[in-house]
Length: 460
Image (tube, rainbow, N blue to C red; front, side, top):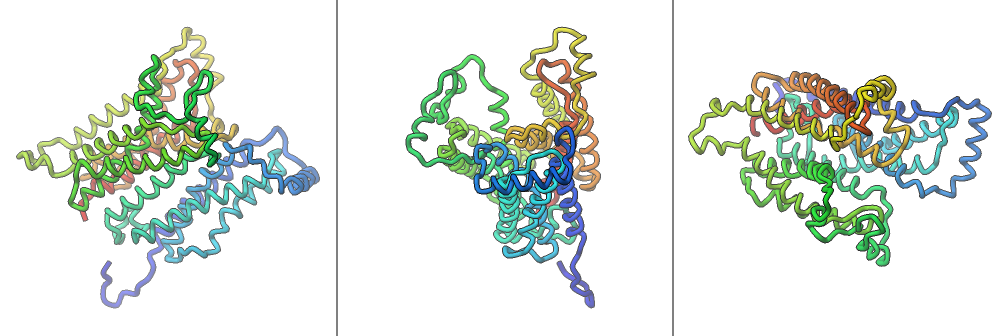
């Protein structure tokens, strides 16, 4: 950035203010999730301090059996570490030895102490795992910023941002790969015992082996878990798209680089899962990695200058119409996914009863009233499912719209799709309507539109 003569090198506080606001919002979300779903009655002060003495007595005996709670705590505090590290980077005060490393521990201690008086049961292990998640997010962000010399203001597309799009995409891929690896290794019940590793090759009675070496294993049964295969594929696809975009911006896009990156990364992840007792190592995931890398290259190539080599003009391609069509097709696929397993209610009275009594109007109640790893992963999955719609919307309006307008429109469209898909699930057996999914749908579309402008804006 070049300053005019006589201009003082003052620090631009706009990105710092934005990241500080996001940090405050996320801390409020943590407090809401921690305090909103307590017991039937609050404790008195005497009862609370009596329970505190009991917690102190049990501190040396960590309750490691609650591995699913540990996983949830780690995932919940990773975004807090990321946001606070970005705020410090915007203030040019990010370093490894900063006192802000204790911020996550302070929030966790405050939460656990307050739970003494709201009929919740604090646990010293929660403080440790919350801190671990916070430090993980903080450290990943610090490493990414230093490794790629990334300017955090580039996340918001500010005019004074000096980071190139290659740096932005490298940081996004690095953070996504790190979080993906952590999620795959949860709940961190790690063992290096050869006996337990060998036992994973044997399928328990009525179950599946924990190490699947047959790539066609899932296709031998009559009931193929297509939804699980789709979710695994969608988890790897962003790595393929990001890798292909990085190759394109470097001027060496090929059909080998992105699939090779996805294959090597997934191979390392599946190898590490051999040592996680509750995780399943599946060779078929490497096949999905190759396909994700190829499709990522195809998506990026379709947006490159390849059509012009065949004599087409950019105006004749109808990019907005194509993006709108793809967005509609993807929205239809989402609806079909929401309606699975296609077992519908046999009686209209059941549908009316579900609408009257089984709709969850409290955000995140179903996710945090019962704490487990599936609830935490479901939040991330719901956001990622709707993010491609936001990306396509940003592509359709990249010329006439600003980034903020595209995000606002995506937020509204995501809200509409979330409401429609949730109401459609009323007719499906064992499906319930949850206001949380509507909020996550809006968030996913808005996040996709925001990130989408990194791909569609002019090259560096």
